[in-house]
Amino acid sequence: MTDFIDSFEDEDPFDSAGLRLTVDLTALTENWKDMARRSAKARAAAVVKADAYGTGIEDSGEALYMAGARDFFVATVDEGVTLRPYAPDARIFVLSGIWPGTERRLFENDLVPVISSEEQLAFWMAVLAEYGDYPCALNVDTGFNRLGLSMDEAIALADDVSRPASFAPVLVMSHLACSDDHSSEMNRQQLESFRQVSAAYEGIDSSLAASAGIFLGSDYHFDLTRPGIALYGGESVNDMVNPMRPVVSAEARIIQVRTVKEGESVGYGRATRLTRDSRLAIVSAGYADGYLRSQSSAGVPLRQTVPRGGQGFVAGRKVPVAGRISMDLTIFDVTDLPENAVRAGDYVELFGKNVLVDDVARSAGTIGYEILTSIGLRHERRYLHEED
Ligand SMILES: *Cc1c(COP(=O)(O)O)cnc(C)c1O
Image 1 (spheres, rainbow, N blue to C red):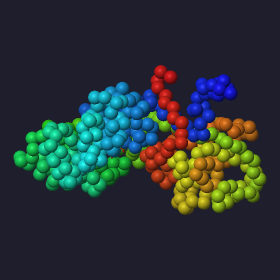
Image 2 (image 1 turned 30 degrees about the horizontal axis):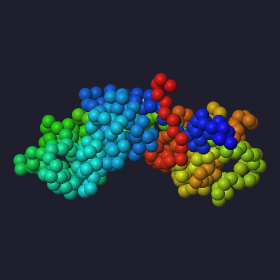
Image 3 (image 1 turned 90 degrees about the vertical axis):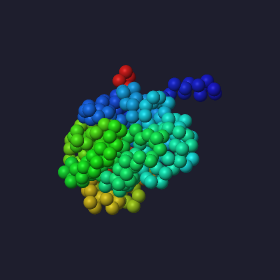
Image 4 (image 1 turned 45 degrees about the vertical axis):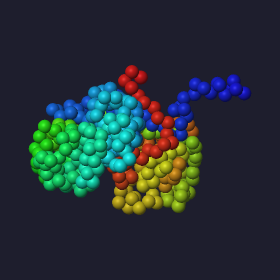
């Protein structure tokens, strides 16, 4: 019996996974280098929040570090703690800042908090009084009205001669609201505002642009850029051909192929009625895996405004979702493929090189960011490197 079980040992779970993800680390690092080149005189950081946009913060963080990234942005202290061993001497900024009770983990892991409110600033000053010098970043709101000190607060702080000498910001930053729309007036307005802030903090690095802002040109680059989605191959700018390489592909295994007669219905709510004899491939991924239900071919409100539901790719062709996507399962209509072109055990690409993550997003009524960060936990993950 144990011999029998031992014989399973060299099975690679990737080969039999119901849902599997391939992360191309070479494409990731090429994308980072591309963004670094486009950032010209500015340094390019790497934004790796939300588990590096679903790709895995350890492997992706390490690959980006090896490619030369030395500034990283994470959302939470936990993410910073996870990243630290993979980016040993890099600067890691924590976008959510500091909160009472997180000081020790920040200091022990050499994380730099991004201070975004008067309350955080007051707490930070108290921390410095107790522990001494420690770097921080300041986030200034220039119109987004999300996080950030007001411009008046930030400029007053810069000019405040009574502020403690231990207060040592290493970065002043702001975030653009409309950089995905290059024709928006808001970009210029925020740029003008941020220039005032940057001037008040002369000698300290400034940062304004995320992925889409980098494409706005050198006025927006300042000293440090903060690309996120572009590194992972996603679109950041509307109505522009996306020059980034796809990084992530998701594939789900076909559990069953069934033949169904004309006139029958498919799935929950009988949302789709078949108008011809059909072959359906049932795959093991659903909305619990981030394959959003709003991509269903029918039976969801979005189909009234965005006519086309999701598509997969198998045997060299795109195939449409049939009916409603359920929690763990999705049905694809493979009738247009030659008979026997697909069978149980084959994999359907949910997104990747053939079905772009942003096309999935469009048919789900969202953006590529949400697709990537919704992938969930049930997949097997494999990383590709150049050497492989
Ligand atoms: C998420 C985030 C980024 C990265 O944005 P992308 O659009 O993914 O490039 C940069 N800066 C801040 C403050 C962010 O929250």
